[in-house]
Image 1 (cartoon, one colour):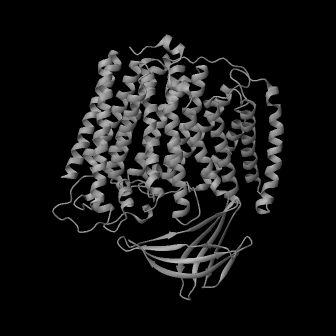
Image 2 (tube, one colour):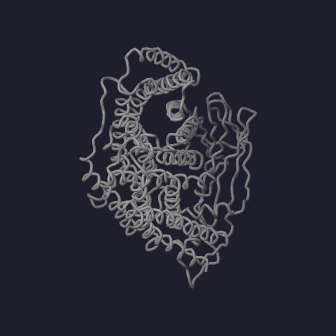
Image 3 (tube, rainbow, N blue to C red):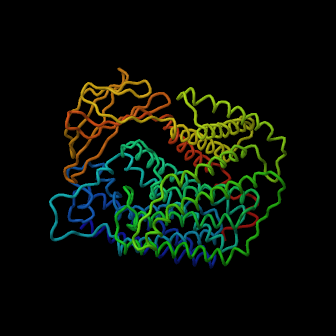
Amino acid sequence: MIPELGHLLAIFGWTAALGVLVSGFWGGYRHSEAWVALSIRLAKLQFVVLASSFVLLIVSFLHDDFSVLYVANNSNQLLPWYYKISAVWGAHEGSFLLWTLVAATWTHLVANRAQHIPLDIHGYVLGSLGFINFLFLAFLITASNPFERLVPNTPINGVDLNPLLQDFALIIHPPMLYIGYVGFAVAFSFGVAGLLTGKLDSAWARWLRPWVNYAWAFLTVGIALGSWWAYYELGWGGWWFWDPVENASLLPWLAGAALIHSLAATEKRGAYKNWTVLLAILTFSLSLVGAFLVRSGILTSVHAFAVDAQRGLVLLGILTVVSGAGLILFALRASTLRSRLEYWGISRELLLLINNVLLTITVATVLLGTLYPIGYEWFTDGEKISIGSQYFNAFFIPIMLVLSFFLALAPISQWKTTPLKKFQKCFVFLGFAALVALILPWVLANTFYVGATIGIALGLFVLITHVNSLLKRRKSLHLGFVGMCIAHLGFAIALIGVAVTSVYSYSVDGRLAIGDSLDVSGRSYELQSVQTIEARNYLAERAEFVVGNRITVYPERRFYPIRAMQTTEAAIRPVLFRDLYVTLGKPMDNGTWGVRIQEKLLIRWVWFGALIMAIAAVLACSDKRYRRLSKRDLSQYSRT
């Protein structure tokens, strides 16, 4: 009865989404307070019924109801309860129910937290969000039902959750990603509303900025968690592999970063209106591209859901309808928009333009490298080709380095025009950063790489200019400026971490018997013992390593009997400026064990920088300017 009720509630959610679609658009078109109020109530109803449906699916997992096909394929009686909950979004059907719930949550928030904006814009935004979730829920109900019964041949036990997904990071990583992905639907909807009403001005940008910031912050955390999971769970010691599914999350993140900066120019100077609204459409479109790539079955990846091609075509249809509608509307209305922009020489507007150009080139480069192998296989009737990290690094890294240089100038620049004398001190800052970048590699690793030195120097340059600006303006700071500076500081920290860990890390493979040791960068790693342990749902061979006579780590090789699958659990111990990373390999015939020992310098700076960027994006949203109408707005707009 519980699965049937969950399915029925999903249908109610789909009906409510249709109601939000109709009442929102009609209310916006007619400037009707009553119809917009109805769409607000229906948005709340949609959220409640989909949340209830999601809870019922969780109950089915916790009760081991293997008569539900999705539960039988992704759970097991021996699975710990917390992994039974995360198994709800561990495969396609349940994760898509989570996707629709997140969409309903964003709709509910916009309905209730954006009532200060003009009535027509509010109605069109809600109608657009209703349209998007109406399509999502139609796909869920007709082609991806997570409540489908497996009767009469109900199994006694389930297949189990993929062992690679039985990890704490995978409990929170997908929800964070989805909140970010679907959050950009709000930006898309504001773009549609702005085009329909013609109100693409500073007030529109100010209303939209917090929603974009929140979505981008959640996506940043989600990507960082995925990177952290790949680092320790896959046992390779890497944190980014340019996997197509990883790229699928990076694309809307880059476009979202460009949108944040473009919105600043639109709000402050009335500039780049067309470009800003186009970015709002494209950013969510790239989120849909990611959903299609992950769920269509055209990619082979540990991150991807294995789904049949027919459902992939339906997702492609949703992508085409949503993105196509937005782009057609933009093509019809863009000519009516006029940007107000007057500046000469170097200015903040110019730096934001350069920022957007560089980020757009990066998006195009990553998108091309991700989609080209798929298109090549399709046109050559199955012949495969791969594009590796060499391609992505050759384009991505130089662009990011150039972007870093211009980011360093951001807090010094002014709107309209900036006197050149304000940049004089930058040469001193850059010289100091370059000097430290030349010395630091010798201190950390007693060696030198040109590329890493450039990255360190530019990261330090960004740090110095932003800290200096915060100190100079400490008596007249507002949260928008503070958030911008802290976000750029986070980027600089991550940049330094990437530059150092990419070249100043060490890896040694070997075979060790009990009592043998390996030396890595002056440290001794001794294999003390290997024991067999039994956990709730797996068996493991756990090794004990003593590092430098004072640190003990325990890498494992786990075997999950239900899935007949083996995983590697690396042992990681952070010490000053580096991670000690030990992986246990296969046992050999001569009584030795394969081991891989790595030392990863400044690797945690990458995730620490990402966390700072996310916090800064949320901090900027606390600026009171985004929570109320200004006097100028009140003179132009009214709720009715």
